[in-house]
Image: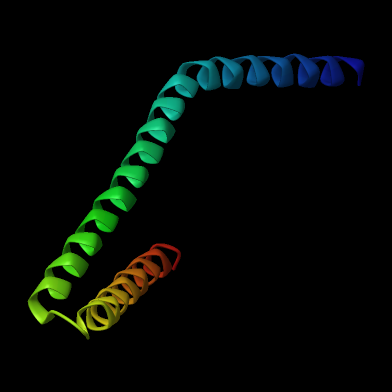
Length: 96
């Protein structure tokens, strides 16, 4: 009986040691991937914002006064909602 318990304890310790080595090897890769994901997400948000600002300025100049800012805001807002809906749909498809 004690032999089985001691073998179980030794095998459990060996398993924990092997998993610890695997985690120690993979943790830097996980950190690098997470860092790149954060940077890519921020760059996507900044790029999308710049595109929306450029669209707003272009529509505002094309329409002119007095309705230029209102129509530019409407067009840009609808496009931003469309982008958000697309991102939501893409994220929901990943979680199926």
